[in-house]
Amino acid sequence: MPTASLLVVGTEMLDPARADRNGPLARERLAGIGIPLSQIVRVEDREEAIAAAVSSALASSEVVIASGGLGPTGDDLTREGAARSLGRGVVPDEEWLAALSRRLEERGRPITEAGRRQALVVEGAEAVPNPAGLACGSWIESGGRVLVLLPGVSAEFAAMLDGFVLPRLRERFPSRPSVRTIRAIAAGLPEVTAEPALAPWYRRQGVAVSILPESGVLRITVTIASPPAEDAAALEAEARADLERGLGRHLVSLDGASLAERLGEELLARGWSVAVAESCTGGRAAHRLVSVPGASRWFLGGVVAYSNEAKSEILGVSPGLIAGHGAVSEPVALAMARGARDRFGASCGIGITGIAGPEGGTAEKPVGLVHLAAVVPGEESARRLVYGADRASVIELASNYALYALWSLVRGRIPA
Image (tube, rainbow, N blue to C red):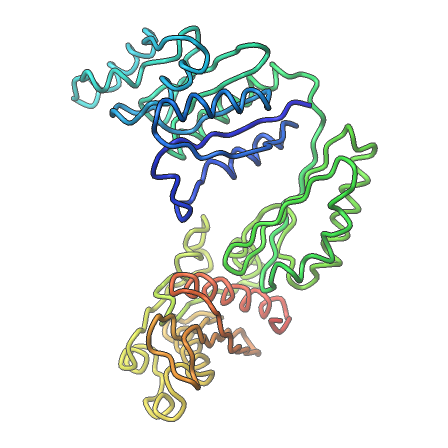
């Protein structure tokens, strides 16, 4: 079975805090055609470093994909590094150069000498067309290995991977195993709580399990490859049953559908709508909801009521309630949720108030304290949570948990 390596090129990508969007995408897409991604390596914008990384990856993987470093500027050196590794040169692809010139002319822009660099390929390579951008890629076969150079811009990387690279890899490696993939989403629980449901699967033949925690949401992927798995269909059914049983009320989906998507579906099924009132999350929960296509059918609107005055004047929260319990309290969170529901004429409401930090906490109400409330017809729920995290993480965690709380309540379950 062939394996793949991904090289993420860019000095800026050496910052551990810099998210790599292409790695997870490549891993999922490659696993789907039976070519597991065995390593992701970040490489600086230096020709020697790129050449060394390419040589090392080609020594261990049948497929190597490099992401980034194909633009028009002087630090875009992926082609040169790859060519150096293979002992080749870098040449323009005349067809892509002509197409690039036409595209720029249509936009009223002349092609510059720097812009021409985006038509360069490794000598002997086939140009990979870029339907979403200007820089072409390179498809290179050498010594029974495949090396592919793609831009780092996520939209371009995805379009070229799906439209060109994956179909070619299917042709190039016809003996790949068949693959079944389960993409589970769970919410409202820590990673360690999911472990008992996953532990039996770590050493099953032909089964690969990965778990990615993302601010209170777990993305669990179970990939079953046959061979070596003998009965992939039976294994998939067993794994699905284990996940449903083990994750229980926290299991949002088994097909990769997000928490916001599933919440929208539940609301639509009941003919309900929702509005949100946020303080410390600053609109993050509303952003998650409107990110779902078709959200206008069930999401009516939101209010960021950061000050006490805004909570009272816009949402109708009693000043006396705030004075008696504090703005960060269960009664205020419930009042905010009710206020959002009533102001927008929605069926359901969410209220979020907290102390995201890094300042503003007290011994009684520490930094990271969040009160969340969800209200649906005939039922209300509120939770006090304390997150030991930085400001940005508190915002992400709280907004995700608020959606989980409402999703649970809509389904007739008090959030765990």
